[in-house]
Amino acid sequence: MSDFFSYRLLKNKAYRLVLVILLFILFTLKLNSQPLNRVLFIFDDSYSMYAPWNSNIKIEVAKKVMSEFLDSLKNLPNLELALRCYGHTTFFKPDRNCKDTKLEVPFEQAKISAQKIKERIKKLEPLGTTPIAYSLGEAAKDFTPKSNVRNIIILITDGIEECDGNPCQVSLELQKKGVFLRPFVIGVGLDVKFADVFGCMGKFYDVSNEANFKDVLSLVITEALSQTTVEVDLLDINKKPSETDVNMTFYESGTNKVKYNYLHTINNRGNPDTLVLNPDYKYDLVVHTIPSQLKNNISIIRGRHNIINIDAPQGFLKLELQGDISKYYPTTIVRKVGENNTLNVQEFGKNEKYIVGKYNLEILTLPRIILKDVEIKQSSTNIIKIPDSGSVLFNKIAKGYGSIYIDDGKTVTWVCNLNNNLTNEIIYLQPGKYKVVFRLEFATETTKSIERNFEVKSGLPYTIKLE
Image (cartoon, rainbow, N blue to C red; front, top):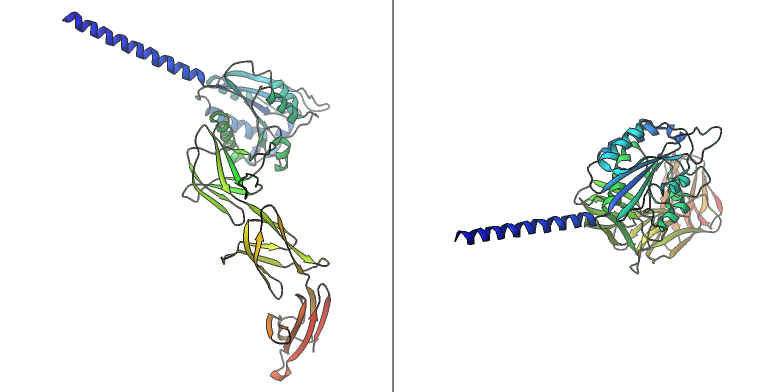
């Protein structure tokens, strides 16, 4: 009997041992199946990094932020870091050294290389020029051949190419060869106009101030490592993501707390550009079209490319004056049909985008022009033209009280009052027949009222004497 139980006990131990071995093998296979992320920082140490920026000079701000940021990467799994610098070995005068780039810290596990990168960055002194294209080309050698890896470049720079290289061409060629993924470019205190310069080379982030530098680094590393990305498709009337160039605000869902503000862009490949949002939040999205479009309670799935679809079909409304250019440009109140709230106040001569639909226009000429059911169609422009106003000078012999009326021979309709503090007053009126009624301030008899009938034609000046 005891032999039987001993046999059963041994058998159970053997099963457990086999199970542990199988679980270990599965865990090892899963671990090995996850790609190794290799992040190469290309750090600008050119002479321009001495420029003042916020609380200090650019190089000192960059050192401080990078040092704090690297601490947050030390314990991340499947991550290796390296550092390449440029513009740091040769003074840029009298001649530029357009090969001034060097791998300062080669790839190692993040817990080791992060500290080495911090120590190397502390000793950097800006000296030279900005050979971005050459540095990218040399960076290809930094990524030694290895299977199951994702090679990532994060370029931190405060200037554009200064050595007649073509960073975009170099970057695209190396991406096509699979040397590295599309680079991330962080512009430190750069003019936003350089976004287009870097857009063809990689994904550009503008660091406008010291405060958001670390946030941008965190966003970049989140996209690089977790591959959690977001694409906002602004759909036209045919449900295609062709709409763009409109601001978007992401709020933490159910609150008024703004998390991100972006101007929607179609990238160089003709697709809505990719964003990085923190997947730990739910979001309410406001697309600032006219009128704005809303989408609430949006969830971001970690580790995936998320697509947010929102209907935003748009067309254009353009307001023009007929005839010669006038000194007087009226404005127009735009309201959606069936609603009383003001959507926009549009100037004449301006082309504005609106969501497809019908609108009522109140044109603030004298007299006012009301246009109803003005239709905006997808990707087309509805041009509204009105006659140019005529200018009427009311010449008063003294201050007084008066009003202007439309007089069509049947009814008299009030247009506006004269300014009783002025003796000479110019008023712009739409073409038509009018009447002015005026009484001098010192005249105490109603019968002393002065009445003048006059006609206004488009673009012409008139003088009406009130005496």
